[in-house]
Amino acid sequence: MMAAIKAGQMGAKTLLLEKNETLGNKLLLTGGQRCNITKAEFDPKQFTKKYGKEGDFLLFALSVFGVKETIDFFNKSGLKTKIEKDNRVFPASNKSSDVLKVLIDSLAESKVLVRNNSKVASIIKGKSKILGIVLENDEKLVAKNYIICTGGVSFPGTGSTGDGYKWAKELGHTVEKAKPALVPIKVQESWVKTAQGLSLTDVELNILVDGKKKGKARGEIMFTHFGLSGPMVLDISSTIGRLMEKGKVELVLDLHPDLNSEELDKEMQTFLLENSKMMFINCLSELLSPKLAETVASLAAIPPGKKAGGVTKLERKKLVELFKNIKITPTSLFDVNEAIVTSGGVALKEINSKTMRSKIISNLFFAGEAINLNGPTGGYNLQLCWSTGYLAGQSVVW
Image (cartoon, rainbow, N blue to C red; front, side, top):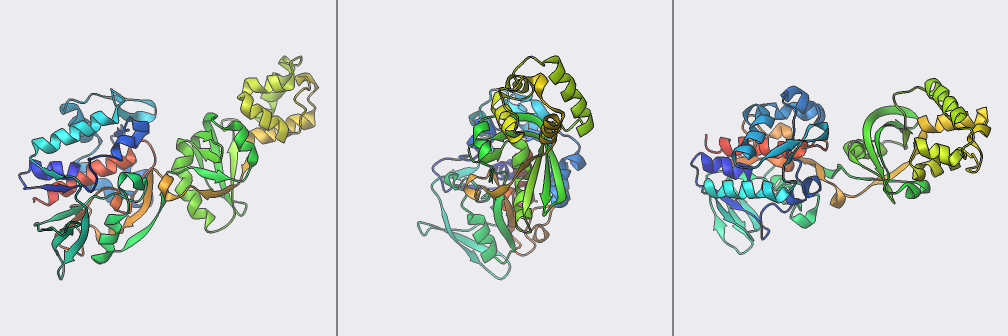
C-alpha cells in the first residue's frame, strides 16, 4: 500500500493487485490489533542495529522515509499517535483499523487503482525483464515496472503464503529459506504449565549451546501452557532456532539480573529473618507471584509449610541459585504459521538498497517482508515496510 501510494503521488498510473477480498488483513492483526506503527528511535544507525548484521541495508531507505516521516505521514492524514513503553508508537485510538483507513484513503487520493480478488497466477519473463503477468482468470496485464510486496509466509490465513518467494526464484533470484521469527518457544519442563499466564517484566535469559554461553537477552517473558512467549522471547526466538540446529540449547533464567548471587543471598537472608514467622510459601509469594513461588519452592525442595525463619542456610543457598539460574530446555519453535514475521526472503545482495530495484530483473522492485530482513518486536518490521515501500514506489517513477 505504501509503495502504491508513493508511486501514485508522483503521477504514475498505478495498479495494486490484492488476492484477498480486502486490503490489510495482516495489518489489522499487528500490535494486538492496535498496530505498533513504528519505534520512536530517530537515529537511523541505532535503529538499524536492531536488524542484525544486515541492518545497514535499510539505512538509505530510512534516510528517505524514516521514523519521523512515518509518524508525520499518519499525523498529517488525521491519525493521532502516541508513544508508549519502550518508545513504541501506536494510534491514539488503539485501533489498527484506523491505520488501515489512512492507507486506503491515501490510495484513493493518489488515484491508485485497487483490484481485490486478483490473484497472480504467473509472471512472463523476458531475457532480463518482466514482460507481463497473468492472473488466475487468465487475464494478462502489462506494466512498465513491477513491485513485489507480498510479505513472507507467517499468518498464511491473511494471504501471506510465500507467493513472492516463488516468483522471485522463477525470475532467477536467490531466496533464503523462510523460517519463523518472533515466535513462541516450546520447552521440555512441565512445571511451566503451573505458571501459565504469568508475565515477568525484567528478567534475563542466557543462551547456552552444549554448555557454552552464546548470548543473552533481557526484558519481559510470559509463561504459557507449552513454554515461553512475551516480547523478549519472541525477539530471540530465531536465534534460538538457529542455535538448536547446531547443538543442545539450554536457557538459564535469571529472575534478579541486577544482583549477583552474593548480593541476593544477603537480601534473601534479611528478608527471611524479617518475616521469620510467616509460612515460607507465603513469604516467597511476596517476592514472586504465587504461581511461580510454588514452582520455585518445589524446585528448591523446601516444604511450603515451613516457617521462613526455619529455612536453613543450605536451603537458602539453593533458593538463591534458583533465582539466578532456573534451567529451561527448549524443544522447538512454533512453526511459521504462528510466527509474527518470517526470517528469510529475497537475498539482499541481489537488491539495490538505494532504489529497491532487482539487480537481475531490470523492471522489478521489492519491498517489505519479501526481502531477507526482519527486526525485533516494537514497530521495526512495519517500519521496514513503510521505508522500503516508499522507496520502491518512488524509484519506479524516477
